[in-house]
Length: 521
Image 1 (cartoon, helix red, strand yellow):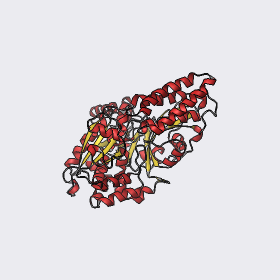
Image 2 (cartoon, rainbow, N blue to C red):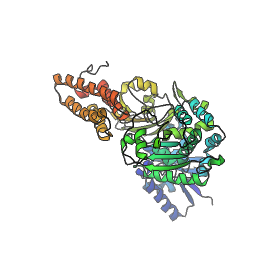
Image 3 (cartoon, one colour):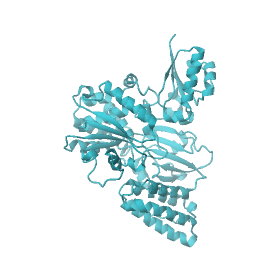
Image 4 (cartoon, rainbow, N blue to C red):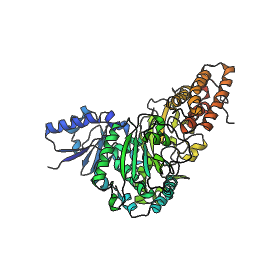
């Protein structure tokens, strides 16, 4: 009798929704019924309203069921779900679920499909083909392939990754580093975590390709402390790669050495900023550095350092495997390739959506997300994390690309979208942005440290003020936001005015202001 394979996610999002209880219940029930099962703990596919979503391998392909609770297991077995039997939780082949079918999964092609800690599974689904090609190329050729692809940093600023790599390659030094910024701290974001828990080897492969490209021998993953599952998975994946010769003193027989270590942060949001992260990696307090010099020239321990986030590095193997021209075939304008978008907040179908850049906010929120979970009218979406701008429902036809959002006073950031219905108080949301900055500021520069604290006070004054006093509070808040934008040392203070000014511009009534109170100068 052949064993039947059942896939149950080990992703921490699915675990929080009961995936471990489902796995235990299935093992207990299978033992009681003397069924021959192989349970594979895969990553989540990112359809979080259907988690825990389990899949069973049948002769016709994988069949998904969800959301499954532990008490559903016995009834699923009664319905012969091990052979794709009919049940109210049956979703059919996962690739046919519209939420997945309408995506363009490149970086996330294996997430939810493979066993994250199986080298055989990873290689069977195209893993390490990019590194194999990179080993046969000159460093300059690897860098130029990345430049050709048009890949921009997926962590916030959108700086061209190939230009950063080229700068580090050209910097003269006996020691260079690759640093992966995995301090994913923006509200409503989880794509980094999904990669690290669902396909960790693709991150290691991307870092190794970067090392070959610029001449680095050491790599570090700076991981946020709130991700213990990712830490365990990454540690096991690094050990697997070392045993197989994909990391170590002789990477894939190239004669070049590269090793990766994981370092866990202490929970400071500011350490998501690359220079503060480097300070923390060096054992110092996480405080922003003055630039120049850029990290690409003088980064970790003063040596040339490539700093990219998880999604940027995890995209590199696809580019090396399939070519820069293939990757640039997705997207629009100067925003090329695909972007993993995280849909969260008051939305019916939250989850991970990978689409070519240029997809509209309306398509994401309504076609994928299904509108608000409350059923009430949508009022606002925040794009780009806690420092991102708020957009009203009337602006949802904006395409998600760097230049378009920047022209409208917004940013792509880490690709997080948080949805709000018409019960939201936008004045309170604006206040939260200033308060968040005040709490998370490293304190090094005055505009951020003092400006955010005064910003909370001014917004409180604006909310409580009478008509005549409101205009004075608006003028003061405008000057304060201008000072923070122009004078802050890093993006924390520099971008905090974005949610504040966008809330005032699009939702002045929540501050007790007329529609023309916040006009562009």
